[in-house]
Image (cartoon, rainbow, N blue to C red):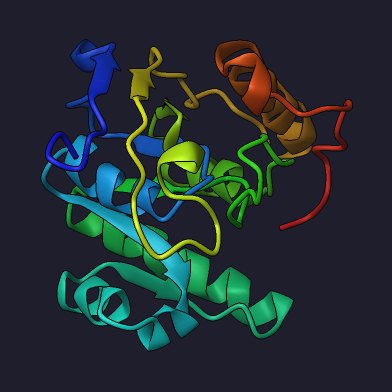
Length: 200
């Protein structure tokens, strides 16, 4: 990244080696490569099974034993998620997930899906938010090359999930989304108040 002209400022590294569910906002392909570097050894991602068809990256993803879920129907998605959690618990792993569920086209934060909360409820792992700023400027949507732009990474303190309850999922989503809204620079904040209660 330095060679490409993208100096990276990192804060909160004291929270970077927890066994946890790491979450991150997602506005650029760079985010995926950064996250692989920024999370501790023994961290796996969860992505839709179709990721295998992404040139090069899909094959690397599978070879690295990251987890894939089948989202073809609600029931298969739930079963896939349960199997993923069992693997995480059995092998003492950490997780990384992008709670927006897709990449923001303009860098502004999107509403969060429910998946990361379900993962927390089932695993009882703490959530460590990673706030990425500037990646959308470094590699813009539709572009084939990286542009020089400063990038900042900020780990926030772990959020304990041990006492979370199934009937408060929407409250947890709003709480974590609000943390991101507060932590992101103005150009990456949502323009309007977004509905964060949509289903995953």
